[in-house]
Amino acid sequence: MRLIGDHYRIPEGTHRSWQGCNLDLTGVTIDGDTDFTGAVFSGGTVTFGGATFSGGMVNLSGATFSGGVMNFSGATFSGGNMNFEAARFSGGSVDFRRSTFSDGNMIFVRATFSGGEVNFEAAVFSGGTVHFGNATFSGGNVHFNSATFSGGVAHFNFATFSGGVVHFNVATFSGGIVYFGSASFSGGNVHFEGTRGPVPVGLLEAVGTPAPSEVRLRADWLPPNP
Image 1: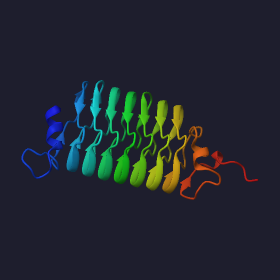
Image 2: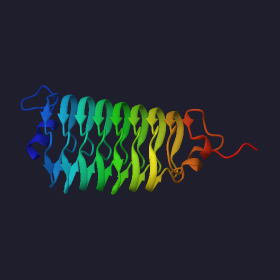
Image 3: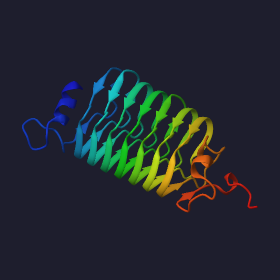
C-alpha cells in the first residue's frame, strides 16, 4: 500500500507514475495504516468495491481528485480512520454508494468540493463519526440520497454551501446526531425533500428565516406562517 501511494504522488507522464491508471483492490481488507497523502487521481478507475476497513488510518489528506473514478461502493468501514482532510474534489467521481459506516472516523474537514461527484447514496451511518466541518461545497454534486443516519455523529459544522448541489433527498435521520451548527448557505442548492426523522441539529438556525430558495426543507420543519 505504501508503494501504491508513492506511485500516485509521482507527476503524470513521468517514470513510474500511476496517475491515470486503473487499480483494482476489490474486496481487500485494510487493517493498518495506508498513506495516500498528496496523491493525485486524475484519471482511470481506482476500485475498493466491497473492501473492509477495520483498523489503522487510510490517509488521503491533501489528495486531489480531478478526474477518473474512485470506487468504495459497498465497502464496510468498521474501525480505524479514513482521512480526506483538505482534499480537493474538482472532477471525476468518488463513490461510497451502499457503504456501511459502523465505527471509526471519516474525515473531510476543510475539504473542497468544486466539481465532479461524491456519492453516499443509500449509505448507512450506524456508528463512528463523519466530519465535514469547515468543508466548502462550491460546485459539483454531493449525494446523500436515501442515506440512513441511525447512529454515530455526522458533523457539517461551519461548512460552506456556496454552489453546486448537495442532496439529502429521502435520507433517514433515525438516530445518532447530525450537526449543521454555524454552517453557511450562500448559494448552490441543498435539498432535504422527502427525508424522514427529526430536523438535524442547528440546521434551521444556520439556514435562517425565511429559508433561501435554494435550500429546500421539509414543510413540517418550517415554522408556521404568522
